[in-house]
Image 1: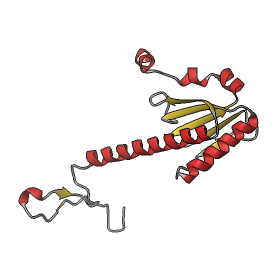
Image 2: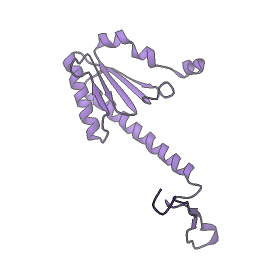
Image 3: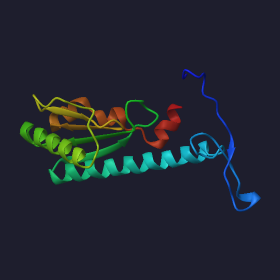
Image 4: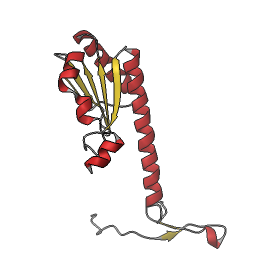
Length: 162
């Protein structure tokens, strides 16, 4: 609210060469019937951003010779992330270097990690990339915790669960 009072939405007409081309717009110069269109555009942008992030992550893991890379769609299972990636390293040093290189490559691609956990011990490093969570683990740790079994919900399992 400003000193002059609450903001009011004002409809105006855009000058057009014909009467049929005139459209009603709001104060943000968006069409009044445009929220659905702008929401669809935002969804397309988010999907393109998620696909780009996924490609960067998979390429970084592959470049660093991570083992058994698995991508899980966890939408509908958790609000924390849409995608979870699980990969293994051959040693604690390998796990640490894979995680460090992944953070570097995602930053270079314009994706800022929200947080990185576990780099000290390097048995299991978690990288939070907002809409994606990446786990880089030693094979014995991966087997012990069984994240794939916990989060891998195929379409048939999801339907049975609902």
